[in-house]
Amino acid sequence: MTASAKSAAAQPGPDLPADLNTLDEKVWAQGVARGADGVVTVQDLAVTRLAEEFGTPAYILDEADFRARCRAWKDAFGPGADVYYAGKAFLSRAVVRWLAEEGLHLDVCSAGELATALDAGMPAERIGYHGNNKTPAEIERAVAAGVGRIVVDSFQEIARVAHAARALGVRQKVQIRVTVGVEAHTHEFIATAHEDQKFGLALAGGQAEEAARRILGHDSLELTGVHSHIGSQIFDMAGFEVSARRVVELLGRIRDEHGAELPEIDLGGGLGIAYTPADDPREPQEVAKRLAEIVGHECDAAGLRTPRISVEPGRAIVGPTAFTLYEVGTVKPLEGLRTYVSVDGGMSDNIRTALYDAEYSVALVSRASDAEPMLVRVVGKHCESGDILVRDAYLPADLAPGDLVAVPATGAYCRALASNYNHALRPPVVAVRDGAARVIVRRETEEDLLRLDVG
Ligand SMILES: *Cc1c(COP(=O)(O)O)cnc(C)c1O
Image (cartoon, rainbow, N blue to C red; front, side):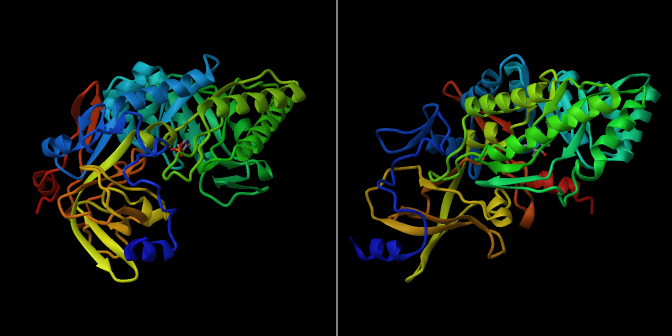
């Protein structure tokens, strides 16, 4: 072992990988591979060529993988269920068209997301509308567009949606967003009676039942079911099971009190993906099977007809399909600590590390290398020491300015949360399919920046 590898091994950090040239298929899009010349390709297109044509940083999205994941979720749940893609993870007109073609539904939670969905031709009845504070104007627009459901989040909103639907002479389908007292994150979940958060109407204290009573009292509203979303980046199904049980109990109470047997339940999104090889996500088949079993069992016990199930994966569909391609600008070894690798992006294109302490991996993609591993921290170019993309990872010790590196699993909540901090120009999203690449969201320009700044 060389001195650099020894000092690297003494650091707390990720496991030393056996071979830095290997791309772990868990964290990379399906179409990504390293070619015989050492250059990484996606759908057979070399990242070096993509960098030349589209510049860096850039989000490179494997369209075939995106579509395959849509189909995997849809097939796993079958014709008796609906899969709503959570648009907030990443939404563009191309994505909306792919979803429409693959037969998925779409969740939006703002006027901007609704406008994107409608503009790209998603049928309104396949759109669900979320949010804890939809404005009256947003509600009116959603009802006028004919969205398939509005997931109501407060008593005030019930009155607002009822009013908007009455004024437009329509009957709007709604679900109740219920907080079931389950908080799930990664491998843990907590089941409590109460949840201290801004979303939804609580089961505890009877808020959700009161919401049902009020909705059923409005002729302009049709209550189709109840909705629960318990967290994000979840690997453990136990939280979904508790949530499903509590939601079915609520359906039973609504039937007993009002004689209304609601036909739908939505169990939300939040399924985790592999950001690093250590993560172990659930497969769609497994999720679908467990949820169907538990809902079926609970409904049998309560003497209820089994409702139509829907789910709302965002991250689990788009997250693994993209990586962010960067060029290395500087390599700064800090003796006895680690080496800082600065790339040409940063917290403006991926805020998740700074915001959530998210873990990512990174690889040298413009060439293979036999050099020793060195412990690195990959950082951006922003004026902020918290501007970290990958906190701890290994890259080859011969890494040099001009090399291209890529951070995988950046399809979800990266472009969607991108900012103009330091007047950074937000990177493009380049979709690759059948050996061809095309820009689906173009790179921002200085002209774009200055156009908003009216002086
Ligand atoms: C964010 C969100 C989702 C999607 O979450 P993922 O972690 O991306 O799967 C689904 N439903 C609701 C209501 C959400 O707020």
